[in-house]
Image (cartoon, rainbow, N blue to C red; front, side, top):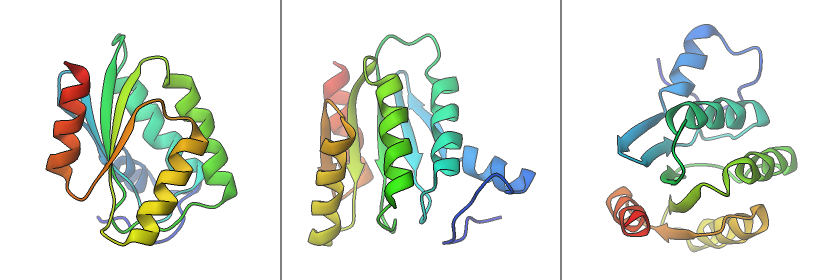
Length: 140
């Protein structure tokens, strides 16, 4: 099964929920990967951050990479939920490495959104490898 470029909500099938959860995984100790869906919704953000909470349980500090390549700009409700979920983990979150398309408009929108949401330490990259390395440096 693959995630389609459509909004997912509470009516998502059990298989779709599993697929959403599988988009977040542990890279290594205290470092996680999140591959965002093309259309963010409050529901998908809750699924993602619930999974991240599970993986980071018991950790006093952690970082994650979020791959936003191919993602559409989130609407106001998704941005509000993202702000809420980030605030819950911000005290333990050392860094977020964001992977965005080379499109300068999307990069600019991602930067503005990230600061409005309240990330304390964030960097923007054109590849996952660069973002992972930035997170590793922050964790040292």
